[in-house]
Length: 349
Ligand SMILES: Nc1ncnc2c1ncn2[C@@H]1O[C@H](COP(=O)(O)OP(=O)(O)O)[C@@H](O)[C@H]1O
Ligand SMILES: [Mg+2]
Picture 1 (cartoon, rainbow, N blue to C red):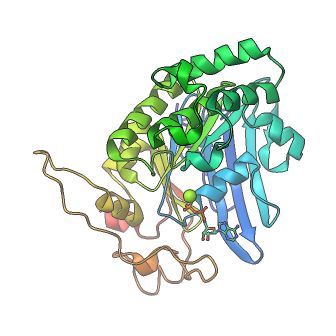
Picture 2: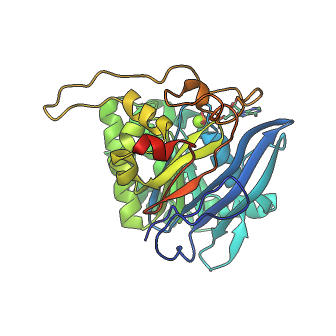
């Protein structure tokens, strides 16, 4: 069953599946809006994640991926005003709106049922605490296992994420580890309490390609073996095929295309998705790298967004009088897919 099923920029849920909609996603984000003062940076955002599946959220820097994940985590500061719903199904079956939890309940859920991994582990790890103490602290903040039991669990998790010689690493400080090892520690920390949902915000962006591939493999393996749902955030459409079941492509605070990753990558319907594919490193059948074709221009500032389709100033398919006037909404295109483009049918045919 597919997890991407309902997205729209208005208040109606548009079912994107052909069959019956999934009855109960683990996380269902509906009409999420995030504004700083009068500036709306995210609007009408809708996506859902089923238990045990991986959703990739892809888009260039500045498209609103990080603030979306912070809002869902309850970590967005009070300077932001948030609207919409983020319904999360807890282990005990209770459905809670993550956008409306008290700070105490939000903190209790974080780590325990939802965890997050950030791009730069050094900002999330405490530089003056040994790795082992930081891992143990996670457990002791949620219930009170004995020190011995917590240490044993920390050791087990370091082993699970592939850290060599984990006994001695328990005593290391974060700066004594390489970037890739630090990211493994972050993942171990996030998974200490076996959350049902892990949100990873550009977890491999700061790493070189070899280490990046290892971390992707690790996340994929852990997601499968723990039966956990994963929201994988990236600017690189090139790695989506390696990790995701489903994909939501974000542009300027909105979802512009969504559906099963394999189908979207094979036949993208939105010019922006095609642009992202063209700008990701790729090789042809003989292994020769294809020339990169970056998308011209930059992501618009949310302070002065373009009229009509927000992508039209950068779009080779834009039609004057249409795309610069009318704002498209995400519409179902069949096979659990959706696209937000006024011209997608014309372009496809
Ligand atoms: N605290 C803030 N105050 C005002 N604008 C912000 C704040 N945080 C992020 N933004 C704006 O929100 C938009 C999306 O940012 P972000 O979520 O970090 O994008 P991404 O993670 O996709 O690169 C950007 O235009 C950014 O400038
Ligand atoms: Mg970001």
